[in-house]
Image (cartoon, rainbow, N blue to C red; front, side, top):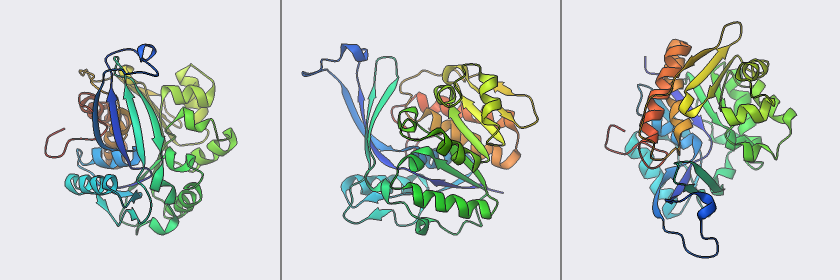
Length: 301
């Protein structure tokens, strides 16, 4: 059986600016040499795109504007084989994010949400065919999209479909209360977050304590650790960790999203944490070896 995964959240145009110097050596107020490329991005869109590199099938629920960026984003989904309804909101601009990639491969993002703010319950497709739903934290952290996404979550939970939730961004979470974030966590079956986010949310650098803290809200917690691999724990069981897959790191944009795609595709089918973590790290290794947060149309990666 092919696992059907619904991805809800943001899709963006990524403008990727690569510099060969450390951030502190940027010539602010003047010129700094760079290499610039563009491509589609956004956490939910990236997960949907990377799912096409697994044996799962993905559908995206999001919005773009009626502008050239939106047309390019939709065309790429079509080329990759991601299903979708009409994503275009007339009169709106598509979301855009400037991604600054420094000499170490680390990225810093400057997003403009654009049409992503228009999500509503009416965007939710017939969900009986889906075995898994991925929800990007950016959608809930956007106050304009939040009511529509919460209504979607209520419907998805009533149909007993597994929800995978990624809180997405420490910077954005700072504008929301802990109580509200905990409420969102309690709606998810599986939490997918990185180590920085786990420290921010739990106040603990002890990863086992962080896992146990977060398991109060969700049945399974996965913490992505970059070059250290990933660790996960389910209620009532010991934690499981896997190492990262060796890769020539070119750009870390989308690494967590590709991991999520690999993990979800495997865990939704087998409920094997070790296999799912391994699948996630393998897909992430392919992501960091290329520029941009999406797989390339027409190639194996």
